Image (cartoon, rainbow, N blue to C red; front, side):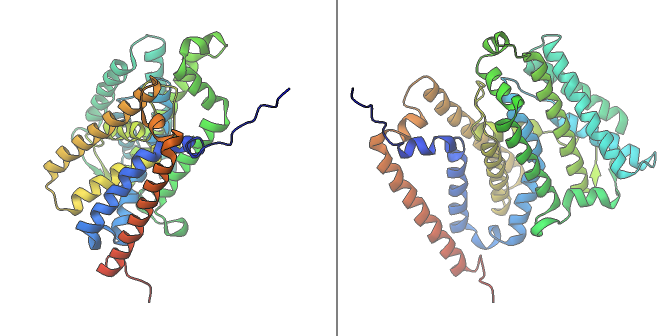
Length: 373
């Protein structure tokens, strides 16, 4: 009997676990190279890089939770209203009823979880489609916030909130960045090391088959929405601390920004495919893009136009690539991981590394990054 030889894994097979964030990382490198040429001194200042991290940190908790929701073939369009209403209730408890800040924040998180539970029950018990159900609840939550606030802007909160929203903590990292990264680590653990993560992938891949194997599909979908509501409330707390103010109309575009970041990061809108690391890369990409537009002194209204166009293009392109790969066509994986293309990929990787090194050298020579001493 002849022994069957097992071929060693190709470079494509080795890189396959990381394919979900190759796209956003390529776009991040493109932005860095472009800004290194056009506006290196302003864009690569330590204060500006710190601002990019602060902006990204606001979306990290929501992107983590939205990864689970989308992976289960769901969507949540109410997160901006959940964030605003949770923050408004927290602000009223502190300003008008003299609640301690830590108690008010816990109540806000609990309220966010409750709103997530309501979303989940509307979808699973009343059988309202995710898109319509969460859009309707978005109107409900925003309306309640407007009724409570009555047009007021609540401001000047205790130091605990401002510390959470814009303080400094470990290794000179802003506190919200630490919180955001901690949420991402929690999401990575949940997705890769728990039954909840495995069931999430299974439900997104085939809900009917998952139910036949004994998984309570509706219950786990509700869990995902509860997690989403809690993380949206946390984002509302971070926003309040960052601005030291909150109003009922805050966070109007949270849903678009978060969904775009998650999908660009490799989580499939068709369900069954998720990447927490890719979602993190997507959040960083969008924050860097918006910051680049501000650095280039583009007017605010044109920033909105450019942001919307780039988000639509990025999501459409990545969704197309995923669909091609899923249908067996010449998608991203199949093109990248063919044995005959492995050397081409290595060549492009080497060129990218050289470009990054040259860009960093150019920054040093132009004064964008000053050597110590």
